[in-house]
Length: 199
Length: 199
DNA sequence: CTGTTAAACGGACCGTGGTCCGCTTCGTAT
DNA sequence: ATACGAAGCGGACCACGGTCCGTTTAACAG
Image 1 (tube, rainbow over the protein chains, first blue to last red):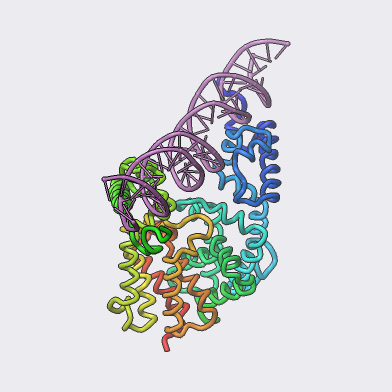
Image 2: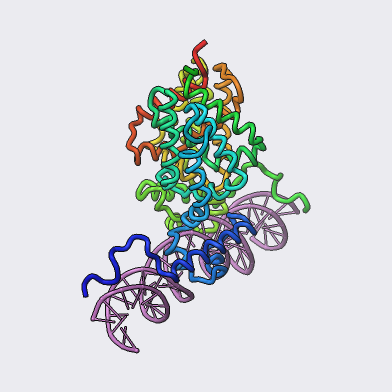
């Protein structure tokens, strides 16, 4: 017959595929926990997970894709928090306050997810085009507008987002030994500068 | 004898070394001009330059070190311009104006040096620790103080510097198709925000 | 010139991210 | 049960950045 297996089928995943996916994710989480993100090699991951390397790449596309998958859970949680969660991060608080809280939330994740977040940043500008990054900017831009920021709000969104990138924050925290409080204050000042004086 | 050749000698470089250095740099410049930064491989570079790969790495340490060497001339020129050149970039103009001009100068280099500047950015936080990057921040911080910025001026320096990174600017310019003018205006607004209202 | 020494050389070698492609397995249609 | 096509599999393979180390050579002393 012509209409083979099933319709272009959305999310159906063969059971072996699903099993291998979780094998890989489990192994990755374990290896990352044990020896840190930068010491994870794809070869070793494949071997530990008991699958071929091709399988890992078929599933996750690239090293940073894998990292992204590892972050997926926390990322969704964060996104839900700032889109639907309680104020001051979520809706309900004044936009300027939500902006401040946004940075605070990013910085609060630093010690846990920072290295992974940095590892996700692919070379080239894939980083800026990544859905996650886009969502961050979209939220920032949205809040900026709501807070009454004037001028090229999209541009300001980029500028703010880029001051929250994990590479920078981790550098400040570890090489320059800045405290989380200082990072938060720095962010809040920046926000204060760009949203202008309170109405 | 014990005191061999010459004193720990500062800058003396053997003639073969010097010759090979310029061979490599010439070949690199040519290859980059011909096929772009991202298509330059160290193997090919070594072969084109007619030296061994070991020589290239001995001389320049790493791929990004090589890129840095390629940028050296323009970088020195830029540094001299903002430290000793004519206003508004150099000393003589009001600090706030110099800050604006600084971003303008960086953005003006984009089309020429941008890809190279982005290629220099090494993974990890080596980028932020690089002398060039430090100089940029130092200058920004200096101007900020002079312009009367209040608060954590060092932090603001980092924030400003990070809004001028080549990766971001190239993304805005090419993926988002923003004009140079828009980038400059975006920078100037940012500066306006952080240095506060004119005295 | 000759001898000596440290610097420089170069290319074989390695680790790692990523691709390729012939083989296997799953899931359905009959 | 059987047939069959697509999805999945896995490991050999490739490209590239970076290292190592035995060999060559510039530079100076005598």
